[in-house]
Length: 555
Image (cartoon, rainbow, N blue to C red):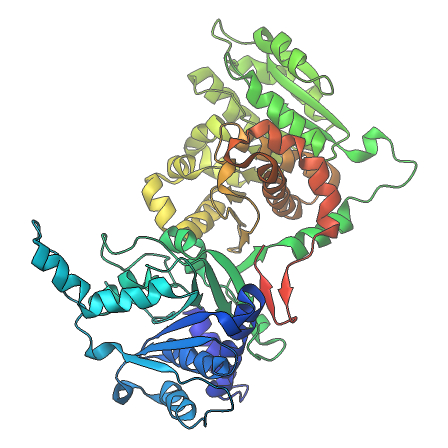
């Protein structure tokens, strides 16, 4: 809806004709096709067009491909149903005179096709023969034989469950492995990310999506996140400053943002010593969970923190000390099962007095005494405090006290933990990630990292940042502990909680991307921590992949 308002403002307030925006959108897709699938002269390209502006984009794309594509098939609606700019594009393309050596476009009116034929429960040879001769099979063959399918069927205005012929067209289109969607994959809600196809109708998603002006929330949510493929964003001629006037409350954390933050905060003078690089205190651990504290400590040091102190149950201190040589440690009282006691809080003031950040929660467990300790730390700790893992379960009972803490608070829940913080299900969290992250940030007066694919960073004033680094291989035990340590290590140096959190989330994901290049889905959390140093070196060198300066990959 925000992007629709943005487009309307471009036309009504800035005087940019809508047909110009459509033409520029088509050119961005053509540029993308030429860059990714060149040469196009030996390619069969099928363009699936709908009735609205997305279909108008498809018709404009077809016109620009007339003289460059080897074979062009345009699957279109009844021309009499086209209106506005889409109708204009139809008339323009049909007024183009064929040039020397130019082929004739094959036009298929999908409104005239019978796409309802399906096999019965116990098909006979005659049923199979009928299917092979059906419009459905013929159209599927076109898609399957293509080198590229341009999906311009449905755009960002979609609402409600899809029915035939749209669901049938999308199902048929999926016989291609190279689907390039215009703005968003057909059938996906641009607001919620929900797939509006019938449950059995979707097999695969797009390989690429070329969206315009700015990304849409639905590209980062639910089915949209999974089905959109590699995301590219194209400039379509909107005037400089227009988006600044359109307050969406959402920004991305990408390579450019991370580069700026790293270069601004992380430079050191030649005579720097370890104290200048900051001190972090990590509190956590229990029997069987000393590794969580070790991972957090490794990440804090790996992100450049000068000193890291781990305060943990005295019974697991030897295990921790053997696993990491560079961090110092401090024993805390615990019960016979290695769980921290509330009395451990008595020893903490002398530890947090000399640090810039405290990270609480990795491996801490859920004992009543431990929860009492967590609540006491939340009340008494004067420094910026990162709370993660099981420690988050102790917070709902003291939400107002957390909100009124003297120091900054950063919460890093996964969807299940977010559900505990707000009293909702993990499913509800995943279905409303932006709104849920905002609610949590406001309820606890905290900067909140909602972890997951495209992690979100929400601030108490309602802003949300979408992180663009990371990969599915990072879905492994201990990854969250590494994130906690990464943010702690950066905050110890940067002393700016919001910027440290945004950079920490990006750096963590980027380190995971580097580890994934080497180990794929076999990477473990320690690999992410081990790549933090390399990621810090490469962030200032990282460039966003671009095509002709007007089309860039979202990274």
